[in-house]
Length: 159
Picture 1 (cartoon, rainbow, N blue to C red):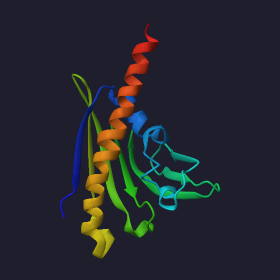
Picture 2 (cartoon, rainbow, N blue to C red; picture 1 turned 90 degrees about the vertical axis):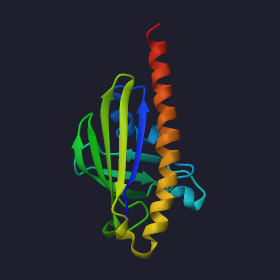
Picture 3 (cartoon, rainbow, N blue to C red; picture 1 turned 180 degrees about the vertical axis):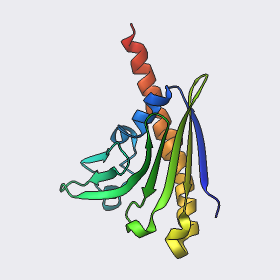
Picture 4 (cartoon, one colour; picture 1 turned 45 degrees about the vertical axis):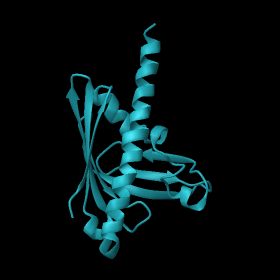
């Protein structure tokens, strides 16, 4: 099965885009529709990412219980993050996400590759197709929208 590949140009520096994607994930991730809590009709208290290799991505539900989404397998500050991704699944069913941040004239090119769906067994194709559409919303709409908000706030701060 071919990996999912999404490319997005954002109007931020690679470091700023990287920080927003990783260290500020709770600021832009659509937890209202793409979280474990959303599946039970609630919003999580928090969504955090530990910014280091070996760090975890944790959703904290309304009761304060942690739900791991994945862990960081590669951390290159401002340039690349790789994640073993297993939201709502056992870690043995992890897929792999790699996100790179490359400088371009207008800001940063963000390349996301999501692979390893064979780990989902019989549901691999359905999972792949669901994530393919999901990344369009999560990365292509919500992350891009937050990048533009960050840029507009930075512009206001210069006045």
